[in-house]
Image (cartoon, rainbow, N blue to C red; front, side, top):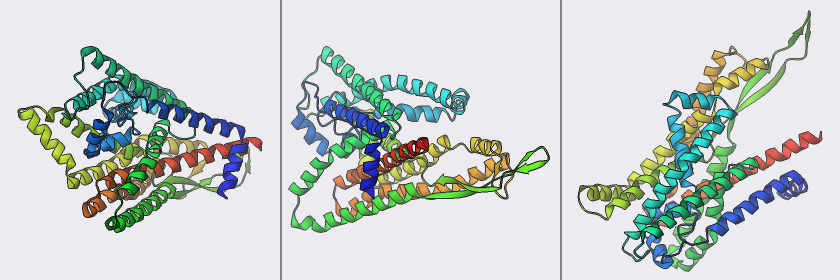
Length: 425
């Protein structure tokens, strides 16, 4: 069955060209991730990252590019941070809220502002990360001159803008969200190395731990698929039309699908971005002296505490699922479209009542979806507390993103195939 779908997809020229283009962009991304910036001891850098869970998570999030201190070592993190900022500002600044309601033209303006803000954010994050590595006292970088500092910041900022451009090119092909696909590709590229590390470090005493990890992985995959495929079908009826004195057409029955997880993988990516920001900034100040250093050390220790980390991660995933769903789900537009088409929900008046009904229904659906997604997200952290495996939480986060993005890509490709079949007819 799946092989027939792949064959049908490959035989459709337009879909095949879209997929080949995306693969080509991912090859370029992985090539740039292996181009290091001179002046860094990569062996010392990798040892430092292995002993730091927060930076290890950032390394996974950037597709392993920090390990190589590559020209794209910041990944798309500044762009994601910029997106979060503008979506939050859209809730408090009326002009931005109006732009969000303008549809495609408004979103284009917001995307332009998001890209512009990504540049100073990339400079800021690049400065913080390079300074952190320079002050780590493990010989990662030698003493950097002003010219070297300027060159490094310019290169890593340009690398982020380059990835942002590649991500938008991928999005235009309608086979999934480009930024999510870049993160997906980076995680998948590190999979062989992770498996090799597990096999090298394997001992007979780790057998039950590895089996437990496998069980958790299967549970997470099943849970993510269950959330992604879950939906509630709202019954919709189409009224008969009057032409003069005659009533034409037949009363038709259909349904309006409301997905349990409308936000997709975006809440996970947003949550990780927020979790990474405070400890990275704190580690920048922790090497100094005085009150600032003490506060910074406290923040670093707080985020290294698995209880706090797990609770905070849970709350962020839950909250961002609600938040992003509210951004992309527009019950007023859906109610207006239904009314224009002469459709209505049985027992609900068209217009304002339909809008309120859709909003309340989606709120109840999102609660179960957000709760389930948050539980799946922190499940590896709970298991880590009992097993003591440091890489389990990182592996669980990676698996969560990979499965969710893979489902998103599959749905997008299937939609493209369906559209081409309709065009033939």
